[in-house]
Amino acid sequence: MVSAAVGLLISLMLYRKGIGFSPNFKKLKFKEEYGIVITLIILSLISTSIVLYYNEVWLNMIFFALVSGFFIYYAIGKEYRDD
Picture 1 (spheres, rainbow, N blue to C red):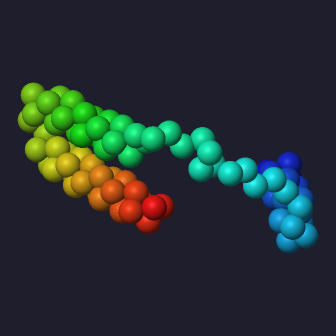
Picture 2: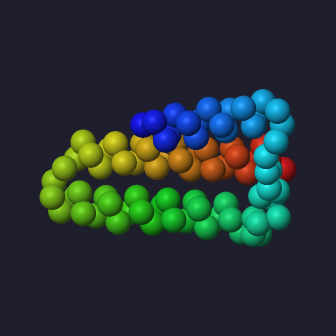
């Protein structure tokens, strides 16, 4: 805890003085990033739903569907905010 506290204090001091490194992550983005993210969310929802269906855990399946819907909504919204 002491080392974490010291590191946090040092980082706060450097941040307030404006010293640091700020990379440009937009250069690292690739063209179809959002499509891949949405596809992975849908595939994980389908695979999780299949497992939960066979185990008859309906409430968890509804929960994962709602969470996946939120992630897709966030991914689509972020796509429009970034452009």
